[in-house]
Image 1 (cartoon, one colour):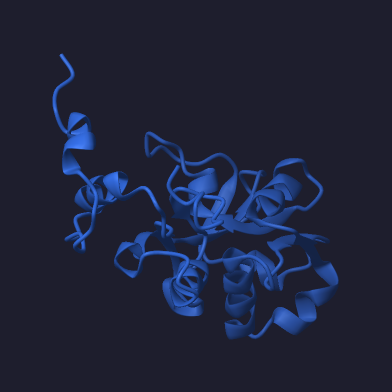
Image 2: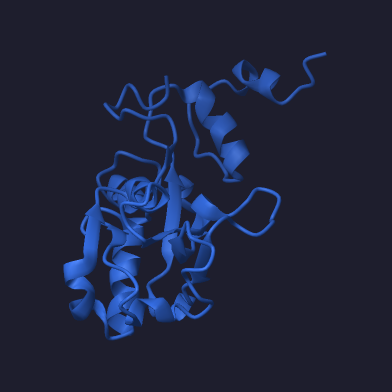
Length: 194
């Protein structure tokens, strides 16, 4: 399998950040041309209570809550973004005693959805409905200028299977480097199987 020959435990890495793919490229463990942004995350302040979070996030400056869930800023891009937003608003230090630090963004969401925290910073994609309808609960879409962009990149590792290389390059829209692969091996992926 691609990636297995180089010791990489993945075929395609869809990272929650852009630093990890950049590091893998710098370590020659991933193909530089495949390092691409696939999403830019949006941070929201969310509560499962429909009347708790106002459209401007003013609840953060109130005494209406005891627990604010955030992903660990040292480990999670959304946690770092939440910290930056709170610092930009000048309230990070005053809210430190109320912070419930989660290991990741999924756990930050879980703390709020289960009621262990009245509100928390989560990814818009966690609360946004697939059909575009109003998300459950209440939320404030944190303005982009309050935190650094949450770029989420993908990368394909260096690998030995040269036949798949041309196929992956075609999917990603990059020109493959000269190689010993046989494009005919993967041609079936491009043809109508019927």
